[in-house]
Image 1 (cartoon, rainbow, N blue to C red):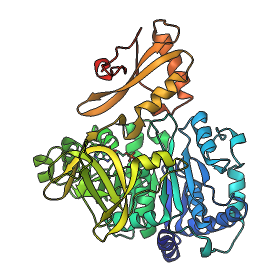
Image 2 (cartoon, rainbow, N blue to C red):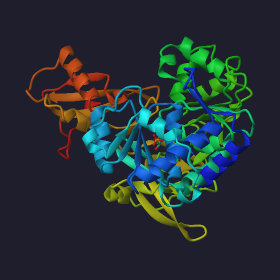
Image 3 (cartoon, rainbow, N blue to C red):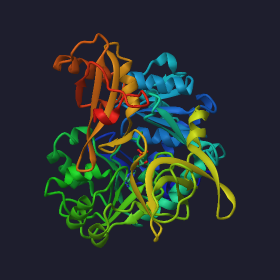
Length: 509
Ligand code: AMP
């Protein structure tokens, strides 16, 4: 039985009137209480158990809204895996996901129509149908709840083959993550956490799994309030937030304005950052602006959830550069493997970070080949086999058992916190008839990727101009989310090759 659901239901019974979620839009339909979330998800679960194809994930399409959360809980209460798909995904990508899931049921909860190819879905229930199912009172049936090895959720991330890959997280791992991560959220009856990032990004699960079942209210910022800093700050001021969760990039954006401080968020007692490098200067600024909050740097890919954390104080941020990404915990460990030999390395030696433990995913949906390449089983401590994930991150453990992440060993980058495989963008580019060959490179500023540059050889041998770039960007937006579209385009007659006969990426950079 899912301990996550059990903990959530206990809390819902204890404080049914408390808000479980609200977004900055306010007004009708923008919030939901614990009691409603529990009851509506029971009702929808009954409908899903009856009508959704057994054993197949349920796609939940939309953005931040109470009904999205209801649908996630309903799916797992019906023993089904949910796969969130955000409205930021263009039709082509949504259809690709549907094709991988082999005609799944889709709950379409976006403001606009469902953009995927409906012929690739088993059925599409629109918002009215989902609401109707939520309105039919049904008995909760705990015997159906998701448990153990059944994937609780499926998160699609950028894949180097040009297709998104679905990371499956078993229910057992979600319970382990709840145990581990909940201790970062101070125990309080009136906690409000920042559920900002889209549900397709694992950071959105930090508070859904680690805080909601303990009575935290999730707060999300509507995109209309992210258009200007003034609107963002106004919404933040009114949120009553106590736990900040974001990528360092978003925190840096806010820090650019001096009014981002403890006067704006007087109740803040925890700042949890994840997803990319936390720079020392950013940490010091946050500590200066929010002297009473505890600042955490946390680390872990979607394939493992966050597995390490560390409190960053002024001494650490001043003395240790780069910052460690955390200590290993009882639920997760790391080994550093030699890049050539695969042998385990000792303290201080740099190699590939491999993570193992209770929160390591079951692999990629329908892709045993990709799963086999990245996952294995290690014997550790008790002698029990533990799943291990090769992260593709370069790093080391120091004598104190602190993990340091020094960047990627492959062509995956973080752009404003979004995970992007450069090959994913390249594959999309060469699908455009105008493009002969393409190489996408990250452009860095101050040690972080500031944007992507596409190096293109046009199929007709022509010289690209501004108009070409505009057209290519527009066409690319139909294939990949907007954040993956390169800002700069550079045109080449031909690409220089390296000694292996491959395009010389170094020379291009
Ligand atoms: P994602 O799957 O989107 O969570 O991205 C995971 C990748 O982001 C990791 O493999 C790292 O390359 C990077 N990453 C995550 N957290 C941190 C951190 N605290 N410091 C540096 N890199 C990080």
